[in-house]
Length: 333
Image 1 (spheres, rainbow, N blue to C red):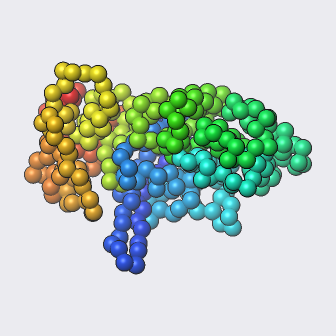
Image 2 (spheres, rainbow, N blue to C red):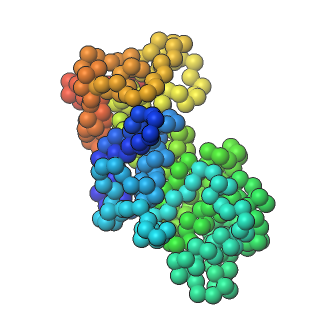
Image 3 (tube, rainbow, N blue to C red):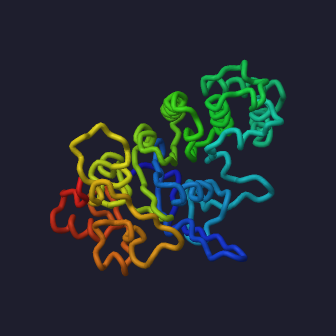
């Protein structure tokens, strides 16, 4: 393993309300991001991906567990500034919600440079802002435009340029293409690939789009109801899934395959997985929706273990099948 830029260990996040019950958004999440590599995080809406993103950059504290950046604990900013801002930056899903509509592009970029003392004069800040726009393939003609004068793709490029202004080592990208037109997504993805190669950046790439994650990620972590249920290199995780939920995600990607007659998670043709609301049940949180569930799944919560080299999963059925027949994919495929 190379240098670890970011490490989260058994991170839990709970939200309390005066009227409603305690909400556990994250449940013992552990991940690590190596220098120059990309960790993709996938899962359906509400699984805790965006909450994890905010914890990774220190915007919110963890209820328990630790988040370390270059070996130092990450904590929420004090006095409005984070001591880790020069190392890690967050790129939000909607660029228009993260850009101040009252500021031109040059003002938005210059403000970051001024706060961090990266340019001492207005001329220097404008020159650096122009260079940042060139870096994201926009150019200086966009310096004096306001956010409402930009397209979605252009605004997201400005948001990426602003994140790069402090010369970070890690970007946490929270669904950076989901608010964009399909025709623009590929351009932004190719931009991220080029920037990573040129600048040696590390990424945490959060998305529900498996195709986008595959395009960028070295490893993938699959989340379900606030916990990581499977993790490892992209190919083994999605092509030889150990966890039934991961298999269901992979099967949901449209493919021109008329020979497929059953769902990869074992459900009969035409059936739908039942919805799961409220607090997860005892045992494995996926068992009410899982066609492979056994009695032990209803009472004992599985742990995330390395079942195959570099391939982790939290599934009783997968653990037993791999132990009986090492190397055989335990989930019907």
